[in-house]
Length: 246
Image (tube, rainbow, N blue to C red):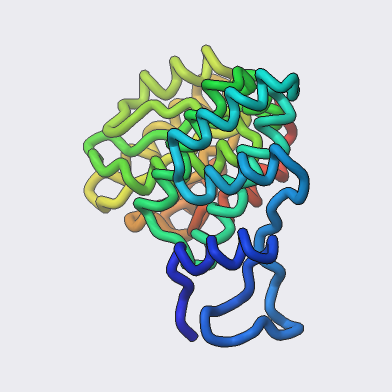
């Protein structure tokens, strides 16, 4: 079975409101339903602008919606974030790729900034701190995870790359997150996560530390009972959705 290109996936989503399973076969009864875009305007156009990675379009549409009297929170929740939901779904299905997810995230940010809905829309489910392990400068995977987590209603505090334990602890105290997420692509750096997990516990902080990336697996995470492993963004979101908001 061939994967969609994003262009074909977007075309089908915009054409009929839902993605199907492949580019050469109709979906079967066993094919999970794809992402659904809003039907009413301006929400559909807002969602489509994010789905297509149209940064300028998302900003302009959001600004116009505000001028037309649409509530900024509705612009975010029922329009912009629905588009990002669709992109994250396509990414999980391997029908969208890294550059497209990052471009969609830029469009989402542009729309949120123009509408003023960012503060109200993001963080409804709690705060999540994201970083890469000390010594690991790879940020693409982290950026994708941040965009998808944010699209699912969490406020993301991105500490960046090569983050030391004291910086993580300081961020936990400041933002009171529901979880800390760490990404590592280098086995030589992943051990920093165990150090950070130990310090989190020693400071009396009871929140999960979720790790992922090419250097991590379930066996690594099992070395600490406060550490969990997420193999991809969808698995991470599932874990986060099961946590109580703070």
